[in-house]
Length: 276
Ligand SMILES: N[C@@H](CCC(=O)N[C@@H](CS)C(=O)NCC(=O)O)C(=O)O
Image (cartoon, rainbow, N blue to C red; front, side, top):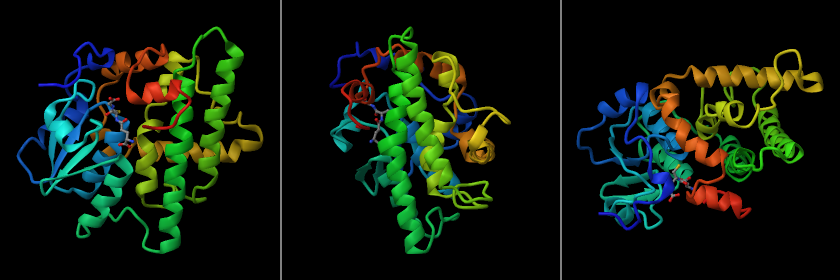
């Protein structure tokens, strides 16, 4: 049963995770008190999924189509968005809230992803907010930009997005490779899902616009730091284990790139608003 009309254009997507992510899903089909209502393709889900995988918290993976919302999802989360968590029969949602909750609720599970000292914890929250309020909306303004023959307009969106990424990279620990140093933390996993989807700009928007090695001018050091971070994140087991085959993301991102997607996020972007 679904409250939504099945003709929602975004509902037409591959029904389940593929590739390495499918193996992870298969390992989490059994009933567990902690349930993750998920869409395999969703970057917000991937934030929470990464934390579950990193900390090896036992959970049950439940695939739902958030554009064809089943009652089981709507009962837990009236907005019908994924990720939604069921913990002890109680609902929780909002990806960044879920990430922090998992850190608080399973203190015996390591690695700890939030720093111990209050200042660094607060810094994590500042830059998490930056990702959600600046990086993701500008990612979508760039991705959804139309018409494609308005080169100046497209370039402006590209510059805006790359500018925010640069601002974020400047905050990273000098050595790294992760945001706060040698070990990854919540900061890395809160942004990783969008950074492993940057191929969409090469594929749909004529290039991302982050300079290649040796071509960064005054920002050469910033972009070298960026490449170090990205490589560490792309090679992280949890990231690989929650990523599906590229071909199945393609039709979903095609709709965003054509600006025909009707998800809450696509509509919010068109309306000049932030993340729903
Ligand atoms: N602010 C939410 C956003 C979650 C979100 O937008 N999820 C998308 C899938 S990637 C969704 O459920 N969309 C359903 C819809 O647009 O109706 C969070 O951080 O969890």
